[in-house]
Length: 474
Image (tube, rainbow, N blue to C red; front, top):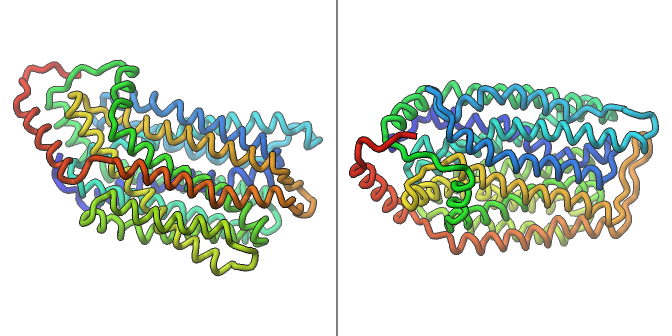
């Protein structure tokens, strides 16, 4: 289990997050503005679709996590889920970007359109969990080395950010090829995205199959304690203090990421007075910077520790969010400079919390005698998605309450009232800043250092050496 992974194995593992990252990024960047400006949904209904989809996405995480922990297969507990879920994820994603017409009157079309998107959102989020949750749980299984996990996650999030960047490049290309045809633009984006989402998952499975097969044989050879019921496992996981701190770190940083990305189209278009292509370029600037810095932070983490790297990244990011609040129309160059600065911190939001989770799992194994990667990753993603659902719902509702005027097909772009512009600025600056500061508080109290983790592994090895050979297997 401590054997170093080859470059090819790290590359294959990273590829597994390429497709889900494309899906997630396109939905975060374009879904809300697609609902309001292309499909014609009221902002309140659009926000509710996102809320329902994300809540369901969160609810199904512990279920899938528990089931993957109990999966019995010669190919391990995780890979069969990736194989079975990839194609349904691509198909349901494509259906998300269709604008069906249930009634010729746009107002009468609102409710049936709303329910169509709710059903498709439930399907997309179901299959996203089926693919992505078992994939993330592989991190703790592939290696137990403290720094190797950070390196492995740098490959994962290199592909993740790369997928996000590619999704924006593809979107820009499609928008330029089909000017003035928003429905065709998004339909094409959905179809192309579906193909890009599906194929890399199978590349990941093929590249890791041999190692996972070997790891599964070793796991079965080691005596395993009887599996506890899911509620008992959830209770034990939630009593793990380092785990709760990691959840806090990740939830705060990722809430700031997703909500900023959701509001940035409105900020760039309505406050800065720029085009659709401009807001895509801003997100691209953030993600390209994050991609470059991901490997820089991974090297820095090996020397300085995960916590210190996180503090440095968050400081740059907080400064960028404050700067965006004070940004004025016409300061386009400064806007892109702040986007680059934000990318320094976004890289640590990807890298550090996910590198901490495997260490927390071993802390829990030492404390309880149980090893439950699926439950821990499920809980992390569950709480993250609940927070994001509430946050994205809040964005839609805040726009509705501020008097934001939706775009009507065939009519000129409306001029937004001052109340809507002020709300957009608050959601791009002060709110993310407060959330990021709270994340720094959680990080300050996180207790597992590199030395502490080495001590945990030594104690686990000693326990395994002394364990009777006839302990019943799960």
